[in-house]
Amino acid sequence: MYTGKTLFAQLMDFLPWTTFQRLVDRYDGNRGVRILNCAEQFRAMGFAQLTYRESLRDIEVCLSAQAEKLYHMGFRNPVKRSTLADANERRDWHLFADFAQVLIRQARALYASDTLEIDLDAMVYALDSTTIDLCLALFDWAPFRSTKAAIKLHTLIDLHGSIPTFIHISDGKMHDVNVLDLLSYERGAYYVFDRGYVDFERLHALHSAGSFFVTRAKSNMKARRLYSHEVDRTTGVICDQRIVLEGHYSHKGYPEQFRRIRFKDPETGKNLVFITNDMTLPALTICLLYKNRWRVELFFKWIKQHLRVKRFYGQSPNAVKSQIWIAISMYVLVAIVKKRLQLEASLYTLLQILSVTLFEKMPINKALLCTPYTTESDRADNQLNLL
Image 1 (cartoon, rainbow, N blue to C red):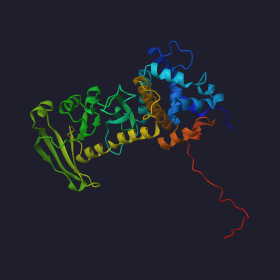
Image 2: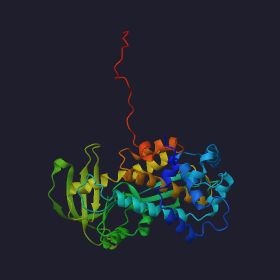
Image 3: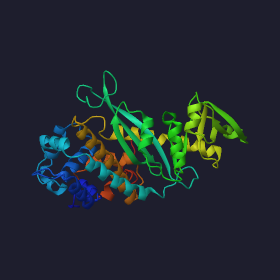
Image 4: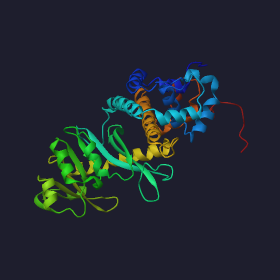
């Protein structure tokens, strides 16, 4: 029988704690702390994410039920909800944001060799945002509408592995297009986003950085066709044109040529109009690039359904942002474990297994192996069939 570490302790061993301690020293996170240091706070909040805890009281009760195992899970003292609440309120959320970025870099290196369904030797990123509704009376620092508050998660994900590479947390009023001013563009990379991000001056800045964009055209875009390429309409591509903008301010913001591709979706029958500054890729590849944008929407759906980013343990901006960044860290950590242990199961399956086995003492690779359940129905015996 295995009598070693709990699964939670084994999972935490995948984290670079030396780097975490350097970040704690940078932000002076443990100054004046007697109990529940930053590492214990991170473990407690990570435990809450992995086991779907609904409140601070819920975290306290569940951990106290396994008091004899807490020391070996990295907790020197019992976790009290008031102490955890104070830590979430006061300790700088940038500590957890920087640590999440460290994990993201590790995950991206592990998933860099993963291939897309598109034959393209370049980095591809998808940009989108999701809104998390909040109570205006409790979160008055996050205005959205006259009757409710909200925050937005603006996220750029690497489509190789669906790993988030950039996350910005803002109030609900921030327009999506303003996030383009915060990005550092990678030369030769492709950025895919919907038409809510179409601002020609910002798109020209992306183009000037040597990057490529793929997005949908707005219905009121005024442009003049310069040249039409031959297309194979059996693929769904209706036309592939070079265009230049006609509106005064639009042309001033983006004075150069770019492509307009019209595509008929065979599933819905709708005509979709894409624009891009890439002049060499086949038109169908551009369409497939935009189709892969749905992965960022799946990412939002996944973290909303399987992590605690809709119900918060604190009400201050610091507590909310700390919780979100620790949730992202747990998502990336599970992705790292999946790759390092070469597991075939999905992130959803791994998270479900961990949620009910964190206190068990068994090898983590065995616990997450997901071997199919078999019965002994094929054994030979002398039992007669009654029917």
